[in-house]
Image (cartoon, rainbow, N blue to C red):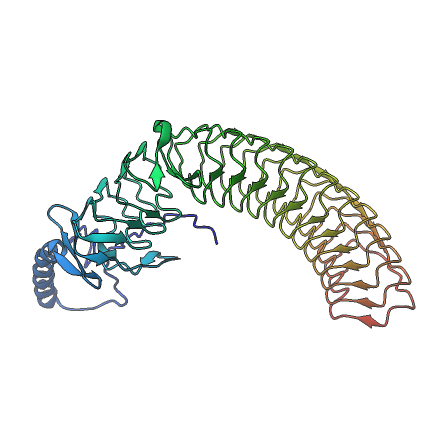
Length: 493
C-alpha cells in the first residue's frame, strides 16, 4: 500500500444544558440523548453541580501523564510546557494507526495529546524511534535527536505539519520510508558531515543514502544532486510547497508515492535515464498541468497520475509496455491521450472518471480492455476499438453518457457485465458474430438505444441486460439463444 497521508481532524461537539449556560469545551464532548424534565428547584441544583464539574475539568485536562513506550523507556507529557519527554534506554515500541469517519486512531500512548504536543525531548539513551510514533503531532515545531539514536522508523513523523527543519546526527544509521511525509513546512534538512550512512551532499536540503545514492527524504527547497540514482518511496510525499523540481539524468527510477500530493507542482520533466514510474508517484498533484515522459519509460505504476485534475493532455511514449490500474483515473481535465502501439492491455480503472476525455483511439496492439477502464468518462463521444481486442471487461464504458455509437469488432468474444450501463446517449450498437454471451446489465439504462442487432452466435443473455432501454421499439432474438435472464427487458416501455 502507499503510505500516503490524509489528515482528518477530530471535532468535538458540545451539547449544552440550556440556552443560557453555554460552555466552550474544546477537549470534551457532551451528548444528550434524552430530554430531562425537572422543576425549577431541581434545575438550579443541577446547574450548580454542572458548574462545579466544569471548574474541575481544566484541572483534569492540564494534569501531567506518563507511561511506558518500550522495555526500558518511559514517557511523560507536561501540559504546561506542551512537552513530551522520552527517557530511559533502548528501543521505542512500534505503533499503528487507522483512519475512520471520526478521525485518526493511533496506538501511541500519547494519542490524547497529538494536537497539543509542541516539543519532544528524546533523552540520551534512547536508541530508536518507533514506526508511526509521532504521526500527526501537528503542533510539533522542533525535535532534537540525541547521539544515542541510531534508528528512525517508518513514518515516525508523518503529518507533523509544524516542523520546519530537520538535523540528522552522525549516530543515525537507519531511516525508514515516509519518515517526514506530509510535513509541508520543512524548508531545511541537514545531515551531520560525520554520518557514514547518510548525507546532504552539496547542501541539497535532502537526506541521501550515501552508498546507494537514493534520495529518501526531501523538502520544498531540495535540489536533487546529479549523483542521485533513485528518488525513494514517499521522498516528497505531501510536500505542498514544492513548486518546481529538476530531476537529473542520473536518476533511473521514481519510487512509490515519491511526489504524492505535491499540489504546488505545476510541471515536471522526466529525463531519459528514468525507466519506471512507481505506484502513486504523482497522485493528487492537482496543480500539475504538463508532464513530459521520456522514451526510456517502460512502465507506469498504479495510481501514478490519479487525481491530477490539472493535466489536459499527456503523451505516452512508445517505450511504455504497461500502464497500471487507476494510472490516470480521476484526471478530470484530461481531454486527449495517445496510447502507443507498445501497450498490450488497458488495465482496470486506467481512465476511470476522466470526465473531460472526448475521444480515444486504442491501438491494434491492445488485446484486452479491463474492468471500469473508461467508467464515468461522460465527455467521451467516440472510441475506436481495434480488431485485436478479444474481451471487454465489466463496467468498461459504464456511465459514458456522451457515447452515441460504438462498433464492436469481430475479434471480441466476450462482453462483461454492466459494460455500457447508463450510456444514455447510445442510439445503436452492433454485436458481432464472435460474441456468444451478453452479460448482466450490459445495456442497462441505455434509454437512447433505438436498435440493437443480436447475432446468431449468442446463446445467453444475462439478467437486466436491456432493462430501462425505454427507446427500444423492437428487438429480434435469434434461435441460437437458449437462456434469457431475469428482468432482461424490464422498463422497456
